[in-house]
Image 1: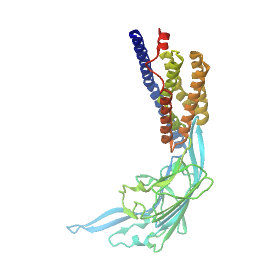
Image 2: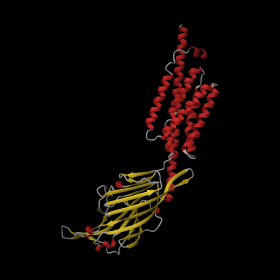
Image 3: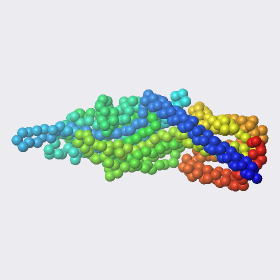
Image 4: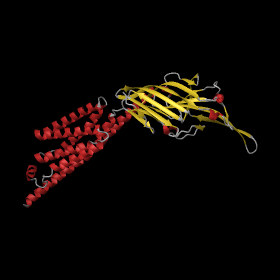
Length: 443
């Protein structure tokens, strides 16, 4: 009896030791799992780098700041010792009304295995300047002949045609300023030196049309006392950026309109010289979202690597207990490596094909490899089929979780909870201390 107890204890220790070895192998395989995640991040960084190069040759994301009327002026005053002193400043005036109508024509540009979203656009700008209230100031002398209307762009390379700026009833050609302003970006100037600005006694209208290239998105700054911006384009996955929500109209693509009042923005109607720290706080616009980001999907799937390894090892462990067929730790390790290589295979194929097809190919290859290897070890078709079915269910479950972005955490948590419950249910009748037959096999 005592001898049997010692054998039972040895078996118990053997099972415990085997479970500990399997657990340690699972933890060790986290190292190559982290290496795969680092590889995904590296490939994603290289993708971003390549896309930036493509965008730089075309034109980067555009932010339009237009227009601003800048008028130099001089202040004359007496000092304490009765000397006349003058100071030179510039008054910047925003439009009273600003109306922008933009039409975007997106297209996908491929460079090898990488893809970016570029667009051409036609932007119609119109509005009014209310100058009367600024023209009459006792302690300022305005130099209206030096006034300029400034059009700001984040990337001037996106301008594809000459810009004719219509001020009231006269046309002017915009010219490059070669100056970078912190709040307006790269600028084009319209200099209406012959328009007798000092006699403006009525509301002045302006209008111009821009042919503008850009990439990934188009944004605006609400300079007008009343700003209306309408953007439409043939892209089914727009992202609306900024602190203002547009009114959208159902269409084949997107159609959005913003109506912003001076009370909604953080930009004043006018300011002297520079010094606006919050100019870009009011920026808003549309972003052309790439709906298929396979690197993000690869990274999300790689985070489930430990779950796949642990659950597969649990199935192997139960098969080992039920069939009395010993599986060597090296064989556990090889199966774990095959599970890790699935993510590397998925990454490499998804760079060439659609993510869905890449997932199908990588999962079938992995399941086939592990199934064939398991059959060579167990020589038992039912147990091999059980493992193959388990792997199929796991990969189907992972793919469903990857597609359900909004409720992925809920579905993933519920699924894992259910799996643990099933393991507890099927293992409830196993007597971990009674393995006499297993002991005889071991001897």
